[in-house]
Image 1 (tube, one colour):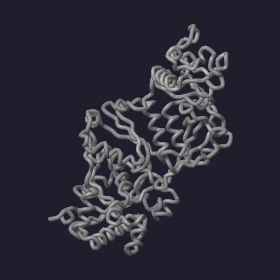
Image 2 (image 1 turned 90 degrees about the vertical axis):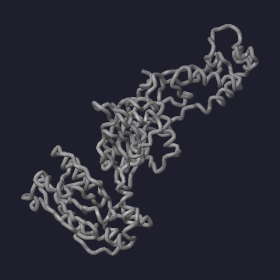
Image 3 (image 1 turned 180 degrees about the horizontal axis):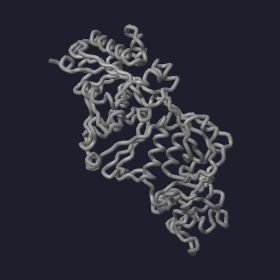
Image 4 (image 1 turned 180 degrees about the vertical axis):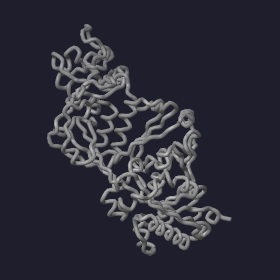
Length: 485
C-alpha cells in the first residue's frame, strides 16, 4: 500500500485575531480528514480568543466578537484536537502560520505539540513551478476550483482539498506522492533539540542565535533565508570538530528578522561583538585598532605616524585599518621597501637618530631623511604609495537613511548611517520623521566600516535606496573604537 493510501491527511485552516502567533489567538478551527481518496471525518468549532477581534478582522472573516463570546476556550478543546490530529499529516495553506498558532496555543497550556506538516503552497510550487503566484485565490482561479466561502475555516479547507484532488488528477498519485514525501522529509536536527524546531523558522533575511545549556550563547549567524541556513547547520554533514561540538551543545534557537541583507549583516556584527558567542571567532572585537596618519614634518615632508584613535569626521586623513601594531608596522615596512621611501619619515626608525635612514644606506631611499630629495616630489610619491589604503571620506552632508524593503513580508527597515557607522534603525518614514540622533553614542568599528563602504558603493548588495535626511541632530561620535579598550 502506498503512502497516500495508508496515511491520514488532516486538512486544517484557522481564523485568528491577527497575524502574530505570540500575541493573537485562534477564533475558528476547521479540519477535514482524508485517507485513501476519501474524506473520513471532519470537525470544526469557533473559539473564544479571550481578546477583542479587531474591526478589520471582523470584516475580513465575518467572525464577530458576539459570535465567539459563548464559544469554548482553546483549553476546552485541546485534548480532543490533539487526539484527532494524532498520527495525521497536518496540512495547511501557508502551513507555518496555522501550525505556529496551534503550537503557540498548546505552549500557553505548557503542553508540547508536534506533527508532520505539509504546506499546500509548497506543494503547488513543486508541482506547478511555471507559475509565480500560489496563494489560495490564485489556485482557485488558475485550476477552476469551485466557489467557497473564503476566509472561513471550512471554506478554505474545501478549497485546499479541491486543489489536492485536482493535483492528483492532473499529475497522478505517483508524482504527487513523490512531491509530498520530499516536502515531509525533515533535515536531521541535533539530539537535544525538538524534532519540529525548524517548522516555525521563517524563510526571510535575518540573524539567528544558537544557545546551549544554561542558555549560554553558542553561535550567531546571518542569512538572507534564515530557515534554509539553519537547516544547513542541522544537515548532519559535520565536516569539522567545531561543527560536531556545536551540534552536540545546542539546546535552543532564536532569530531576529530583518528586511534585507545589509540589516542582517550589521545586526550579526553587532551581536557577535556585543554578545561574544563561544563559537564565533571571525568578526570578534580585537583588543586594538591601529591606523596610519600622514602629517608634514618641519621641513614640509610627509611623515607617517601610527594612531590608535580614529576620528570618524576625519577619515580621509587615515590610511589602513589594522588589528595590531605589528600588522601596521609590517604594512609600513612593505610600503617603504616597495616605493623607496624614508624609514625615518615613516616612523620605522627614530627621527632624532643622526645620519641617514637604513633604507638610504642600502640605496633604497632617495635622501629625504637628509633633505636631498625635493619635498614636492617626495610627497607626491608618498601620496601615490599610500593612496590605496586611504579611508573613504563620508560623501554626504549628514546622516542618511538606507532603506531595505522585503516585498514578501512587507517589512521595511531604514538603517541610519553616518560616517560609515550604523547609528539606528527605524521601520517607517513616520518613525524617521520623529527621530533625533542627539545623545546617541556610536563608536567607529573596522568591520562595520568595511561592510558599509562596500554596500553603499554598490558592490555586493542590491536593492538599497539611500535617503538624504533633513537635519536630525548628529550622534555623539566616540573617536576611540571599542576595539581599543
